[in-house]
Length: 441
Image 1: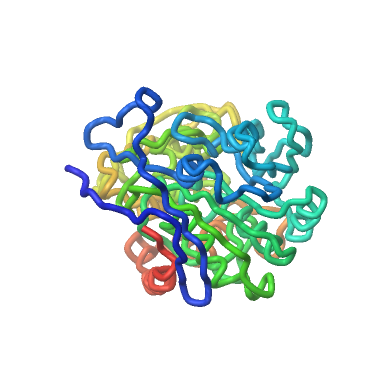
Image 2: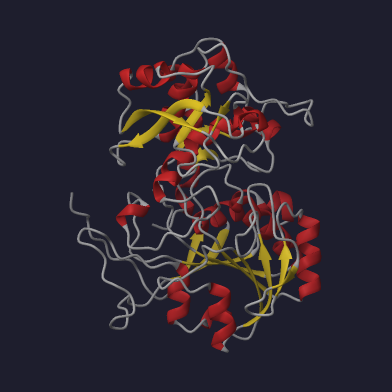
């Protein structure tokens, strides 16, 4: 199907949303120098990121300031050149610090890990370990490094439990309290601009969901920053941060990563492809099942899902295919995960289950699909929710992922897919209305 063409505003202009005013800096024309970037395939839209826009102005937004950069390997331009390397080599920007989130600034750490604090070999810039940093720790890092402007440039994948957006939130709160500027270099949401799923509730917030947004938020990081600034920072920081969003160009809300010419760099070790990102807002829920692996340590994490072959079998996939879920089919699959996360009993063991095969990206609903998978998996005697001994008040990890005990208790009680999904329809509609003033595309 041919893609609709849309013209976006260029130039700098103030964008006001409620009490929040941000400067959304648009991009100049995207024509690349001959031979520097290949033309996209037919039917693929050429899209520019906030970084691409910034580079084309020779970093005008950041000149004369002491800059600290929050980024990881995804912070690259269309030629795969990293933001910090570009800034450092430009002579136009004084980069005084970099801050590494989960997996680290250069991306060498696995899930739940970081690279530590040290000096970046390529640039000589001090990189601070920011994974899991509290507001107080962010303030301390800002003060020690002498930062005046904070720049955030990380590719999100559109799910509430992907931790980079909470790195952004906590660092925004600290920047507001210290009185710093905060600049977000926007990037498209690779799973599109629609919102799906249940709302986080206050009693179940954690590092995989600090604030009340739905499971698949359908926003870019720039839009989320605007939302956070207006909806949450007054309570947590005493007022909004001075926020500037450098916008993408030529992206629209129905575009997925595969519809654009943007390079794909692994945002984390188990996010190898855009299709991984498409399934992740749903199949990451299997992190909350003790007896089933979400495929970490395979070549198809979050697409290969299964439990021990002595306990699960091909009937799971057969029952799922019989449901005729939109946009997806299930292949009977056998595999041995070489990374188990919190499930060591499954490490290097033969597992039986399914491979989630997306056959129509536009029709696929990852969260409804995952609910169906959970409903059918719950029929096996070996099925068991993951419980964390360190949290005696809220022991079920699935509750933290979904934002409340509702999904777990409904599935345990025998509810079918339509009932589980229908339970969050009102809160999803309310969130969709709430986010409208902050959308940029």
